[in-house]
Length: 221
Image (cartoon, rainbow, N blue to C red; front, side, top):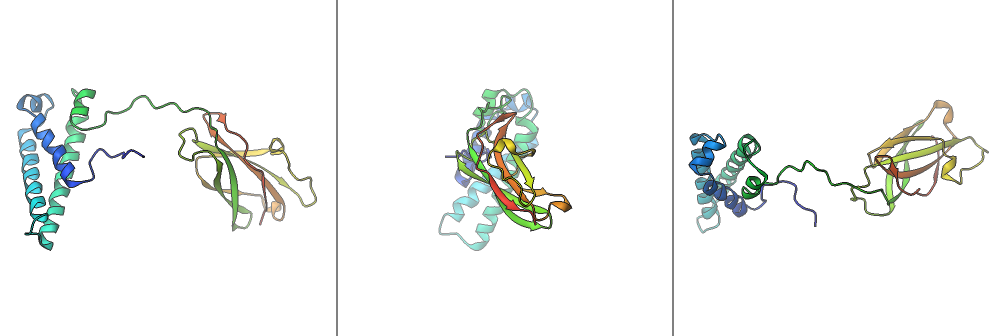
């Protein structure tokens, strides 16, 4: 399952639990050490109490459309204040990685996960765009599109005039460009109209290339 990238929980009860945990952790000593003004802390407590009370009403027989709106607005204010605390106090020294975990936050990862050589096989699916232009979609023949090794695509192609020798080996392709997009555009010279372009694609990752995909052919409009 893909992990949620935002640190703020999605459910209101969990949002309250997160902020409640902060109010317990933020003793007077820590508030001083982290540079949190008393007024800001008091405002966080007030927003928490308001959101908690309105959520209880919204989940009870007192529920009305007005209470629902008030509850939504109260949580919007609470979340905004929580994000303010995170950005202005919790992401600055002297917090440690352990502090961030205690606060229910994700420490910043300064060491990106290395990715290996790409193994996916992809091909180009062409479509008409305009005169002397072909649109191109990257289609995965094999492999996982979400693999971190699939950072980009090296598009190889060759233009062949009518009656010319067809391309049967990707080593015959003589032009290329790199793109990170799964949908891109190839522009040709005016005189290429009516010629055939042969295209093959390799996944590329910091100079490391994956296997060749199938060669596809299209008439240049």
